[in-house]
Each structure stands twice: as C-alpha cells, then as structure tokens.
Amino acid sequence: MRVQVSRSSYLVLVSSSAVFVTFRILQWRARSRARKTVERVKEMVEENQPLIVYWDLSVRERILKAAIRRASKWMSLNEDPKPMVGQVGGAAVHKRPVLTLNPDYVLKPLLADHRGIREIAFYESLKILSNNPTNQTYSTFLTGKQKEKSPLLKQAGEVFDTLALAFAISIQDPVVTESEKALKDAWKVVKKEVEALHRLSKFTAPYYGVIGQPGVSHAPECPFGVTDDAHLLLQDLTSNYSKPCVIDLKLGTQTFEPDAPPEKQERELGKYPEQAEFGFRIVGMRMYDPDHPDADEKGFRCFKKPYGRSLKSRDQILDALRTFLCAGVEKPVIASEDKRIAEDGVNNFLTESVRCKTIANLLVQLRQLRRWFEENKSLRFYASSLLLVYEGDTSKDNGSQDAATAKMIDFGRVRRELGGDQAYRVGLRMLNSCLGEILDQEEERLGKHR
Ligand SMILES: Nc1ncnc2c1ncn2[C@@H]1O[C@H](COP(=O)(O)OP(=O)(O)OP(=O)(O)O)[C@@H](O)[C@H]1O
Ligand SMILES: *[C@@H]1O[C@H](CO)[C@@H](O)[C@H](O)[C@H]1NC(C)=O
Ligand SMILES: *[C@@H]1O[C@H](CO)[C@@H](O)[C@H](O)[C@H]1NC(C)=O
Ligand SMILES: *[C@@H]1O[C@H](CO)[C@@H](O)[C@H](O)[C@H]1NC(C)=O
Ligand SMILES: CC(=O)N[C@H]1CO[C@H](CO)[C@@H](O)[C@@H]1O
Image (cartoon, rainbow, N blue to C red; front, top):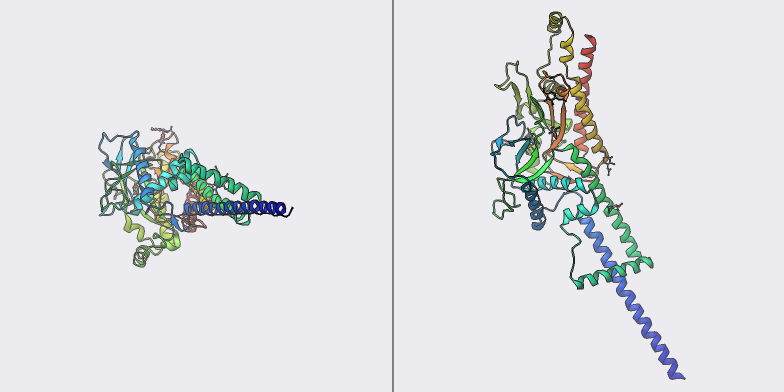
C-alpha cells in the first residue's frame, strides 16, 4: 500500500515538474522572441537617424545595386548626355554640372560621400512604396530581410517559437503581453513613414534609377560604393515648357544636420543668417525676358547664389519673387499701359501683363505640399530644395502659358525626426504669404484698369 502511494506521488512529482520545466522553457522562448521582434522593428525606424543605415555595407550595396538595375532595365546610354542649359542651383566650382538626355531626362551627379547613397535610398524608397505601400515592403527595403525559406532545423525552431508565443499569449504572460503592445506601436511608426513617403512622391520629380556606374565600387575613394560618375536619372521638370522660368529655393531654417561638427554649423549659419527667419533662401533663378537689357543671347536673365544671399529683409525677398514671377510682363509705368491700350483700342495688354493664373497655380500646389508637412510629422529635410517652374512664353493662348510646377529636389540629408519638419513649414508659410501678396497686388492692378 505505502509503496503504491509513494510511486504515484513520485509520478505526480515527475510529471508536474516536467510540466513546470516545459512551461518555463516555453515562457522563456516566448519572452525572448517577443523582445527580439520588438527590438528589430524599433531599430528599423530609429529616431533622429537617416532613413537607412548606410554605414552597413550590405544595406547600401543592396540599395545601390537595385538603383543601378532599375536604370539599366530599360535605359542604355547610346546618346551622350549634354550639360543642362539653364541649370539654376548647385554646380559650385568643385562640382560637376547637371546633364540632360533626350527626350526628357536630367542626370544629376551624385556625391561620393554619404549624401549620394542617402539620396539614392530616398528615391528608391519612394519608388518601392509607390507600387506597394505596405509595412512588409518597407521593412524588406530597410533591412533586406525577406521571409526566405529557412533550413529545416530553423523552421522547426520557428514553429516552436510560434507555439510558445501562442501559449504565452493564451495565459496572458505579462512580459509577452507588454511586448505585443510595444510591437504594435513600433509597426505603427513604420506604417506612418510608409504613408508619408507614399504621399510625398507626387511632390518630387519622377525617378528612374542610377546611371553611369556599372556596379558597386570598392575603391577607397568611394566609401559608400558610389563613384564620381554616378548620376541620378530623373525626369526633367522643365521639359514641357517652351521658355521655362525656374527658381531654386533652399527650404528650412538651417542647412546643416544636428550632428554636423560645430565648425560646419558656424560656416553654414554665416552664409545666410536670414534663413533662420525666412525659412528659405533663393539659391538662383532664371527667367525669360528677352527685351530686358540684361538678357542673355537666349533671352534669359539669370540670378546666382550671391543675389539670394544679398536679400536681407522680407520686402527684398518679396521684390525678388515679384521679379521672378513677373519677368517679361511686368510693366511698372502705368502711363505706358495707357498708351498701349490707346494704340490697340482694346484692353488686352493688361490681362497679359499679369501672371495671376500662374501664381494661383503655384499657390494650389504649395498648399498641397503644406498640407503634407502639416499632416505627416516624421521626416525632416535638411538643405533640400524646392524648384518652381512656370512658362515664360506668353505668346501661346491655349492655356499652356499658365502652366506651373512646384517640386522638391535634392534629398541628401533626409532624417527621421519626431514632430516632422517645422523648419520647412516656416519657409512654406513665408513663401505662401509672399506669393499671396504678389497675386493680390496684381489682381488689384488688373481690377483698377478694367
Ligand atoms: N528634376 C529636375 N528637373 C529640372 N531641373 C533640375 C532637376 N533636378 C535638378 N535640376 C537643376 O539642377 C539644379 C541643381 O539641383 P540640385 O539642387 O538637386 O543639385 P545639388 O548639386 O545637390 O545642389 P546644391 O549644391 O544646392 O545642394 C537645380 O537648381 C535645377 O536647376
Ligand atoms: C502595418 O502596421 C500597422 C500598425 O500596426 C497596422 O495597422 C497595419 O495593418 C499594418 N499593415 C500591413 C500591411 O501589415
Ligand atoms: C510632359 O507632358 C507629358 C505628356 O502630357 C507627360 O507625360 C509628362 O509627364 C510631362 N512632363 C513633366 C515633367 O511634367
Ligand atoms: C498649346 O500650344 C502649344 C503650341 O503652341 C503646344 O505645345 C501645347 O501642347 C498646347 N497646350 C495645350 C494645353 O493645349
Ligand atoms: C500618416 C499621416 O499622417 N498621413 C497623412 C499625410 O498627409 C496626407 C495629406 O497630404 C494625409 O492625407 C495623410 O493622412
């Protein structure tokens, strides 16, 4: 009798301790798996960091290869690209010019430093998300890890982990439950970024890949695999204009990233301190104004970097924007307008003398961009440009003379920052108010003379 009791209690003891050990193992596996997954997702979209971990060799190689493949799929350079006529910004002495290629491409030279690979990654992310804006696509883009077929042993491990997790969730293990919540939040951050990038692509120039370098370089002068010959292949935003008038605005209150060395910060601040107040600077502009004494042989007036830096007050900025927008049609002396009306007998000169529709067109596009910045608060763009283009040819009368384009370019310094880009919004607000003021004045002028 006594033997039997002790044997059954022995069995109970053994089996209960087996259950206990199994429980512990499952719990441990579930907890460590859950923690790791949260870590992995959080790392993917770490704050105050560039979009991709370009210092990771495999990440930058994968993205660069994808960009080269993208361009080579359908583009072979059987024609020599030519230096762009009418490039407005960039191309300081040490830089190479932007090139153009028929029918409507621009080739922007990439920098071999971190900015080159970061700009490629930015455009690649837009492209990848344009077809398929999901967490999965983006996480594969950022980490390179796909749900690949793993070896049998690993698969067994996965099945075990999945069971362990299911078990831990069913008994509401506190650590696993907590991790599940954290995981959901981490994916929400990813999803936000996916949506933001997905909606941003309509404000940027269409991108077709990287051209001019055959593969990833391992030369010491190419620390990130990008060579001196690499070019971004983009759509030429001026290609549909017969006399494109272009202004390049560098947006934001500062042009350096927060981790820039102090000397660089000081240097950048010294270039144009007013940018902190205005939220942008005029990098350059080029307008069609063939009758102007300063016009070049093609009929364009050009303003370069020093001009933008000389603008010290809001009024001067306003004048500069008016000069840009009213080029070739601005007739400041009312007397001459009256004379023209008298000669023609009709008042068609005045309708022609203002660009109200063009300015209104730009304002609509800028409003949409502003909305994006107000509603998508996860990215920040340092030293990025906004390109405004309008038709300078007033001889057409079928509507195309009112065409205008506003697109963002230059993405070498995009970062993830909670709160979004307050600094870019300062610039957009200022730009909006200036254009609005110019439009009001023009409409008033027009109204007075009707
Ligand atoms: N997609 C485009 N369509 C038309 N013109 C373009 C396009 N991209 C660039 N440009 C022209 O090239 C100029 C320089 O472009 P971008 O600002 O991208 O170059 P960058 O060398 O990085 O300039 P920066 O020195 O200001 O950083 C622009 O001002 C514009 O005139
Ligand atoms: C991405 O993550 C968010 C937040 O967890 C979720 O709501 C959404 O359904 C996920 N989308 C996809 C396609 O997985
Ligand atoms: C120019 O017009 C064509 C035809 O409408 C269009 O496909 C193309 O995208 C336009 N280019 C730009 C830069 O807007
Ligand atoms: C207007 O006419 C020009 C030629 O003068 C042509 O290139 C352009 O496509 C036309 N635009 C529209 C909107 O019809
Ligand atoms: C995630 C998010 O806030 N997305 C917003 C981005 O901006 C657009 C407007 O351009 C909104 O519609 C989205 O909801």
